[in-house]
Amino acid sequence: MALDATAPHRASSTAALGLSRGALELKRFFRSREAVVFTFALPTVLLVLLGSVFGDRYEGTGVTASQVLAAGMVAAGIMSTTFVTLGTDIASDRDDGTLARLRGTPMPRAAYVIGKIVLVAVTTVAQTVLMLTAAVTLFDLPLPGTVSRWATFGWVFVLGVIGCSLLGIAISTPARTARSATAIVQLPHLALLFVSGVFVTPASALPTGLVAVASLFPVRWLAQGFRSVFLPEVMVRFEIAGAWELDRVALVLAAWCVAGLALCLTLPILGPRHR
Image 1 (tube, helix red, strand yellow):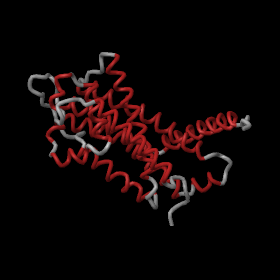
Image 2 (spheres, rainbow, N blue to C red):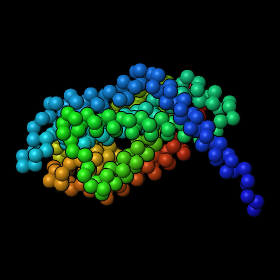
Image 3 (cartoon, rainbow, N blue to C red):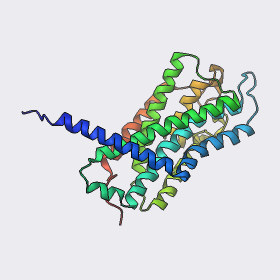
Image 4 (cartoon, rainbow, N blue to C red):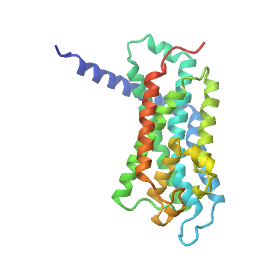
């Protein structure tokens, strides 16, 4: 079988087009004040407001409720820049004809997806830095002091970003208009944050029924993974299972990455606008 000598060139060309598309996506994002404020401000404002209310310390730990909240709120920031951003952006591109115009150009669909990945990567890192800065400055959240904890932060972050991004791409499909996409995306977004224990400290205070529902989705495990990174070991007894369960965190997040990819390959993500 003859090898296709043009394949490497096509791949590099697609990557270059994707990076150019990513630069365009970033310019468009930062020029939209509403998108910037909602994406970056909402999770951080919630962190500051709720963290100021939850000031009590966990007896015998020296850890405040605001620090527990801040650790879990990193997951909320990731959801905002991945799931919400992609769910609404792709639906908007479909609604205003952007995707239809792109289908009429030589640019491969993969370049469009790469552009969205660049957008999500930059905004998610910026959001995480912003939230951690606020948490360290206002609530004395200690940063990880060991390499192993930073390594845990790294794989939880990467799996969380991939899984939530793929789900955001998938959920953009049923939206018939850009306006309806906001409702379709925001309802599960906010519901998952509440039932997953992000806004509740300790998470073990959640009703059993909500715990069972939250355990099926990645947000609970994402928040739990981050708490294992930023909180001292003494806080593990306040988790739902009395353990960090990092093996289960990795398993569930990886499973959602696979499920999200399967959905994206099955659904007509970049197909024509709904009629």
